[in-house]
Image 1 (tube, rainbow, N blue to C red):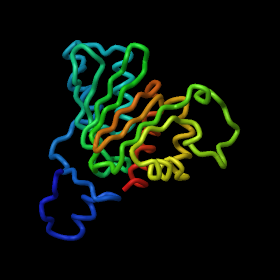
Image 2: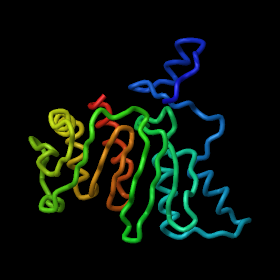
Image 3: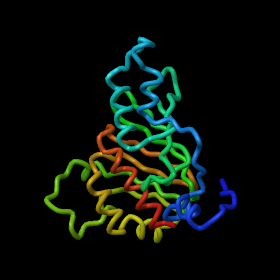
Image 4: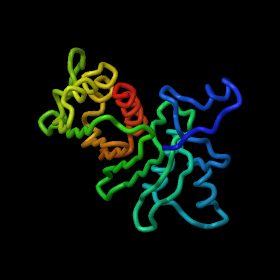
Length: 208
């Protein structure tokens, strides 16, 4: 775990902290997705982005990604982070990989250790159902759950804010697994990436 150095005054502490006291230290130099694009694909260098790579970098720019770098020369895989002050920042590092079928794999290290093992897989029979309203529904009715703490797992998934976002993403999230401080997820495309980060923020807030 990273630890803050002693700060001079309360105002600095408030600036550095988030809703559960982020342990990340802001770097003096960060690379945004937009800066990465300019540095690696400027006209002078004569390199051309594929449409998929361009879509990834545009999406990372939209979510406010920083410290962006391509993690593989053979795959469309990028490492990035969210800035400390970002409202959905619960991560140390995030890796995003786009597969050939346009599925997106997310692997991330969480700032705080998650207090249980939680694996959710969206049930195929409910995946493509369309509802006029999700009122009164819980996400636990639509996913298969594996966990070592069933009581807490249902408390998290049945939380109104968690259920609200998760239910809207049923056709987008294929699976999500959290163990200790590691997150793994498979998403159907890039379209709802911002909403996925919002969901993770709510899950972590409820759990911690």
